[in-house]
Length: 315
Image 1 (tube, rainbow, N blue to C red):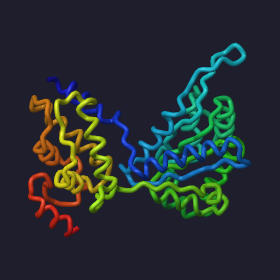
Image 2 (tube, rainbow, N blue to C red; image 1 turned 90 degrees about the vertical axis):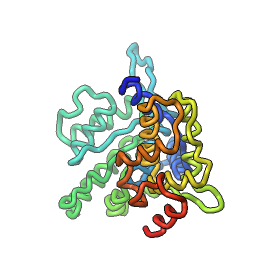
Image 3 (cartoon, rainbow, N blue to C red; image 1 turned 180 degrees about the horizontal axis):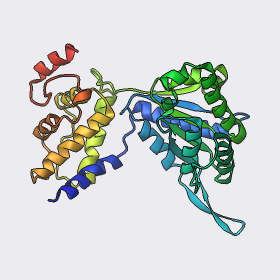
């Protein structure tokens, strides 16, 4: 089997959507903001916060999936309607750069031509033309340059720009980013008032007598893998012992857990087998795929449950 085919089969895991509790709550909350904004005097905006790998992009994709783009005939021309879109703030960030990024996401031919003021005006015009109802603005913390963010004038400029965008378009905005992005939002009482709804994502808990979100997440994910990756068999992680090893390896981070699972599939296929075994996870862990997020310094798939529990307790 060629390396390209192996990686292609493993990458199909990225197509699997498993929404854990906090992610499902965030998707439902953002969709509620969208619905209520249609008739409210002011749009319902929100902040989606989480460390890397906790599911922010997954939440955004789930929201966008229910708001697909479409072509509409308007005055004899075909116009692209964009009900919602995702835009990532570049780094280093400026207000002009953010406006340019939004124009690019809206399909503007020359998104980088013009001043911050003219670009912002075009963004407002494009949003109305595209009948946009929701903006997902990711990596908002990139506007938090340490030196600039300490200046009241800079923070005020950013706050005013966001407020202008909301006021002129009545389109709800979801600011997505690391926890520190709240600093910029809360620095201005008016901006903070406009973004009262906060959705937080974190690493998943293992649980005790009852299964925690992590166990439910990996069970659902592993159940879908044989079909998506064309495998004959895959560990179901219903066993508390096996699930604990994966939890220790990933720290409960959904992205680390998914990355390790994907690597285990690659180990399986490179060995010319069609059934993944727990030993494949041990070999996958040795590649270093998720050791930066691991709760332990040992390979959790190569020790007894008792030794693993002792290692976790030392953290």
